Image 1 (cartoon, helix red, strand yellow):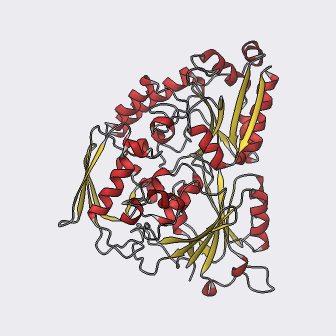
Image 2: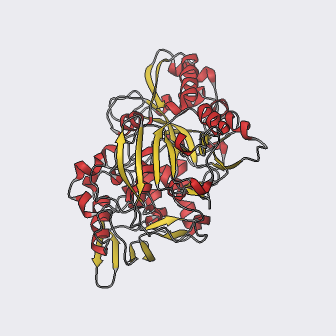
Image 3: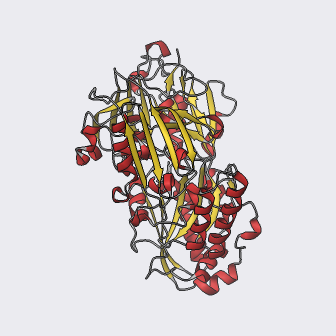
Amino acid sequence: MFRQSAVPLALLATAGLLVAGCGGPASSASRDTLSMSLNTDPATFDPALAKGGDDYTVGRLLFDTVVRKDEGNTLAGGIAKEWKAIDASNYRFTIRDGLKCSDGSAITPSVVAASLARFAAKDTGSSGRTLAMGSATATFTPDDKTGTVTAKLSKPWSDFLTGLTLPQAGIVCPAGLSDLKGLAAGTVKGAFSGPYALTSSQAAVSYQLTLRDDYDAWPTFAKPLAGKPAKQLNLMPITDPATIATQLLSGSLDVGGVNDQNVVRFADNSKFTSRTSANTTTYLLFNERPGTVFADRPDLRTAVAQAIDAQAFSDIISGKRGTTIATVGSDKVACVNTDRKALVAGNAAAAKAKLAGLKFRVVGTTLLRGGNDYIGEALRKAGANVTVSSLDNANWATVTAAGGKDWDVNVQGDNNQLGTLTSSLLRVMGPATEDGGRNKMGVVNDVGYGYVQKAMSEVDRSAQCAALQGAQKSFLQRVDAIPLAVLPTTIITASGVGIRQFDDYVDPATVRIDG
């Protein structure tokens, strides 16, 4: 959904899947094509440079990672058949034999190491880099004779293995690495290591992915995938949950993601199966770069918090299906703060005393349009002169990740693919986006980030949680972000098509046709 951010995908069937005159999906035995909806056009087909939900989707389908997420926050083999964390700084991967790129060339340890080295390089500017290794540098050493790749981090980072499940860490084949411009445009036919290759694209209309005939590298999940993969996937932009729900009910869609009150339209309908994920959180972020209205002004940031009602925001964006949060992660994530006393309490009079007459700009994704408008109105009631811009995912991600002074308050939608608190904390501390990090506010917050680094040097969960509590306390006291709510998204599937959900992560590459 959001640009680190991102609502899970709606996957839909094309008209070609329909039985003539029936208005419903074709039998599973006759299907070989499915269509998936994207929220907007992908900004890039280079997995390392992916910045939002639609980029992550195509990245997951086109490029395999060395390991994948599985049930219960465990890992499954991807390109690697075995892996070992020697300690928080040293790791070893054994690469599966016989894997091929989309041009037929072999995926060797050298190929894997070269792709990971580019992903990990600061100059690449991958938004997933700090998730996978924090501020450390990484060295990847291949051994084609033993079939292994060793990874050494300059600083410990215990989330490293989980970080390598990110679509941004997808393995790009040599043809793609030798033509980075073509890689980003999706025109390098031999770049892909994943199950699908991009065979045609038309912006704002569809992107056609074709199953590779020579692909036989499906992840080794604890529970094997059932059914058959589609021979062709058509990725089509679609944003409105009401439209998705209507098309599901009419039989023209197979799978759809619905994040609002339209979910009730499927209640007690035995023709559909629903899976709800709660890994998307929402919170306000302030631009604190020098020269912005909120830089070095915790009093003004506090006033904004005093003017906002998180429950009202939650009800608007989710159709009263969401829950408020006390940090930037959902309550399902380990080590989260649940002490609401740490939050700024509402105080309309105090907010107005500080905000009256101030001018600032609120930005957010169109997928939170109602919530964006609520934030604007709440701040106007406090006397501020506010403009609200609801942008499509691609533009929103670009604007809020570019650095600079083009926005003041960001209504952040955060799709936590890793399922770790660190993933969301790095939005409000650590390296800034313009420096290759994930921090959109632009100020490192050395105290908070120090706690994050300490947590990632620990392998003991209780020690990690103690440090992460310190990190959360830091940003809450500074009011760098205002926690709002979890946005639940329900993936609805019609009979004959399935998709796997691992805890709160729905994996688009697991879409299957039954039978």
